[in-house]
Length: 148
Ligand code: NI
Image (cartoon, rainbow, N blue to C red; front, side):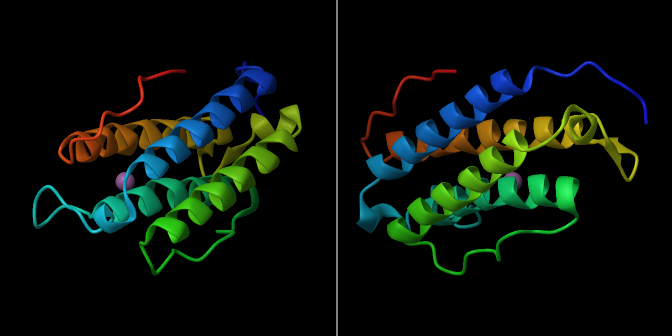
């Protein structure tokens, strides 16, 4: 194993907790009857987008830390399902990361460090949440100001 510098776990958990709350806030702002809204026919609906954003985190963190995906991909994209996915998936990631030892945090899985998987999950979240803010704007809803 190669010892590497990592961002302190407490700082990483702050980022994840903030991401969970911010994502939940966006999901709450979209009215239930707009969860089917899509800006282009080939793009995901708002519900699909938010489910994809949230569920992917548990898949990436689960695969890199235990080789397993902890949850099935959600099959419904209604508001309550999305809110549950956010709660379950981010909650899983926060609990899992909080329980990792420094050795596990700097481990390498199939040639890629766990830290890289974590960065990918955070970058993926920001990527899709940025899209979600435009979905809100297109429905006349002011998204919350970005925070970190
Ligand atoms: Ni994606």
